[in-house]
Length: 355
Image (cartoon, rainbow, N blue to C red):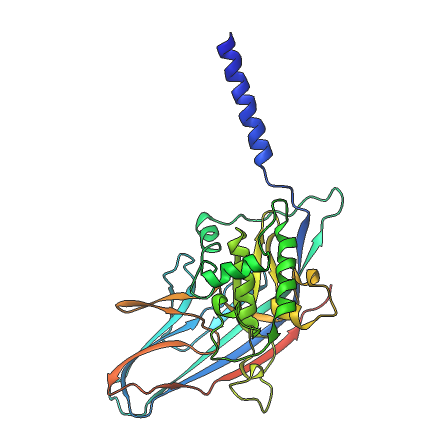
C-alpha cells in the first residue's frame, strides 16, 4: 500500500511541476494592416578597368513573404535561378552565372531586379478582457537555435558585448517580459548613441557597443545581440525604405539607396514583434515602449537576418548583406580591379484602400 501511495504522489507531483513550467498566457497580439503596394526597380553595375572577366558569379536577394510583407513577386535577369544559402535558415537567394566567350579588359555586368509587394503596418496591442490570443506558429527547433546564436555581425558572445550588457544592466530579469526588456534596451540605445551613416563602417555589435555613434545597422545589431544573449529569439530585417532616391544625393548618403534595417523579437503566443532602434532613437518625443511592436509598413525587406552563406561553385562564401550591392565573384585574366556602381533605385507606391 505505501508503495502504491508513493507512486501516486510522484505522478501528482510531476503533473504539478509541468503545470508550473507552462509559460504565462499572452497578454498582447499583433494587429497587421495592409498599408501600401510597392513596385521597386533596383539596377546594379559592376565594372573592371584592366581585368578581363571570363566568368561572372553573382548573388542577389530574393525578398521573402513575411508578417510585414506579402504578395511578393520578384523578377530578375534571364538566366537567374533560385538557390538556397547554406546557413541553417536556408534562405532563398538568386544566383546568376555568366560566361564571357571573348573576354576583354574593362568589361562589366549590368543587372536588374524588380520587386512588387504589399507592405503591412503592424502594432502591438493588449488583449481585451476575455479575448483569446491569436493562433501563432511556434518557431522550429532550427529557427530557435539560429535566432539565439551569435553570427559575425550579431556577435553577442564577444567580450565587448558581454561587458557592455553587464555595464548597462541589460539582462532579462527573472519575471521580466521580453517586451518590457526590449524597451529597456531601447532606452540605453537612445541615451548612448547618435545616428551617423557610413556605408563602409564596421557596425558589428562588438564594435558598435564601444562607439558613441552608429547607424541603423549598428543599433539593430546591438538590440538583437542583447535579446539573444538573454535567451530571447530575435532577428534582423534587411531592406530598403519604400521611398525613391532623393535627387542630388550621392552613394555615400543614406537617401541615395535608402538602406534600412530593423529588428524583430519572438514572443511566445504573440509572434514576431517589430522593433526599430533607429526610429526610437530619432523620435525622442515618444516613449521608447511605443517602438516595441511598431512597424509603419515602410520597409521592403530583401532578406531576413545577416551573414548569409552563399554557395559559390566549389566554395561557400559569407556575405554580410545583400542590401545595396550584389555579392559577386569572378574568374578571368590579370589582377582583379573590379568596382561596384553606379546603382539605380526607383520606388512606386500605391496606398492601400482603407476599410
